Length: 298
Image (cartoon, rainbow, N blue to C red; front, top):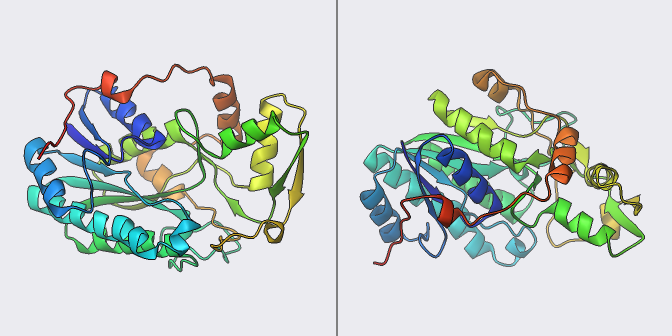
């Protein structure tokens, strides 16, 4: 199977490229420099040249706070980009996997969100991602929309790397304890995407590790797994105001996804321990691991 990956320079894109290539698929990992998903010409050219069976869209505007003042850019990348990809996928009979977020919900639910719950984003980033979801659904292409949250793992900067860095610089760290979601280990997410796309059962899914946590609980688990002595202190989000509002509880319920996959997701605490243990993982450049490479010079 030919698999085209957009946003391949990110740590999720890299991990997915490794996962799909490890399953003997022909993977074309394209960075934003190689494929701008907001360019209709570039999108169509890539699909004409590659003729992918599967397109996985990791390209996204992800700066939640900056999106509040860069609304047009956020909506262009997160809304128009998926629309162009989905339209091209319909035209060339490719299946689209589009990655979305827990931030499409307002965070007021007392329980983890089901796929069937109505989205109601409270910030520009969430609104732009919801627009992308709607564009994909209405395009007429075969699609998987996969919502996930709080990514951590090898190959890129994330919450875990930030906490570990701060822990080596400070004796104590204050971490917000009034925002809850599902920490998700990137290798598990990449594996889940590959498993889900192999089922042929398209639709919208929630894909995370089992369990939820506040940022404080997440940070404390990271510090304990790393056997560091840094003190983690809980605080409220009011102590660290941000331009964008965050959902109080955006935990996702992945149960329907697990039924389709017929697999169990490990608890996030287990995967934090795995991540700390495997921190010495030798990261190779994806371009050196995957052939053939595709580079649009047009």
